[in-house]
Image (cartoon, rainbow, N blue to C red; front, side):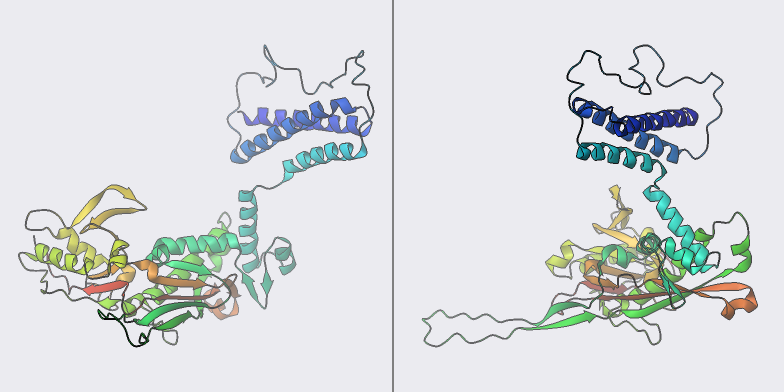
Length: 453
């Protein structure tokens, strides 16, 4: 509907609510009229909400209509104009019954007040945008700490807690880029998270004769890994020129830089865990079990495709049944290049498309879904094909609630006319499994120097 007509209809409904409020306050509404008046109030409030939603979705007025304005209530068969007061029939004794109670009057007036206030209420999207803007304005110095607090931004000790709306955006981006977030299990809590696993199996007994002694005890032993979130930080810098340019959405710049800096650090921590002083013993590259096929694969050989296919069949059949049923492949770009070139001796490609892509996965490898990421690269040897297979839900991630913070650094980068944003979080992520049931296997094929069929 034309925005001009929507505003006209909105004004008419608000006027009618005002008239009803006046009738209620002056005692014109009788007990017999309560139901009809309540229904009319509810209808007007619902229509006002719909009008407001449509106006919010149309921030720009459409082109002017050459036709004369038409009253949305005009036309044949229209109902009685809601702006016209409803006069009770003069001869009706029922409408002249007793006055309504104070409780009934307060209820009607409360509904009208709620409907009238709703016209100025911000919807969820507007509130999120307001909070994003306040967050960005505060960290770049456009608003004071007091103003930031009134807009729901938590500050203290020179840091500002990243609002949930932006934190969730950062984590969503991290999940898109970090496959271990996508397929692992994330726990958000402020306490320690412990995972027990079996390290010594119980042994059963068998005796075909009648037992004359007590059943011997069998030993069973569990150990546990406690996720211990480490102080996690990253640094992003933005030029002052970029922040001060008119027309540039500051909040988008800050959030974008925040995402990139944080996710790069998180991915390396979970896949490699080799940051000096912040090593992760449960990182995927360290904890996945090395796989060696029964026959070595030479990617330059004439039948490399068939041999690689056979090796992948061995690899996917290595885990226990529970892991195999939930298995999938995660490979790096070099491995993707290799399998895309390869075919079996009967001419079928190793990498085959899904009949119907699901969850962003469009291909399978020996019947299992496959994802690729540069995060799976071997450090310093990006040309080495690396293939992981297993149940990646065994990768456990703990996030400490409300820990994601950002601190503004002005003086440190002033010589370069930049502003730094130091991002801080508490996080841990480890691959956890019993030694009797390894969850993920890792296969390095060797440097790619050519392809075969």
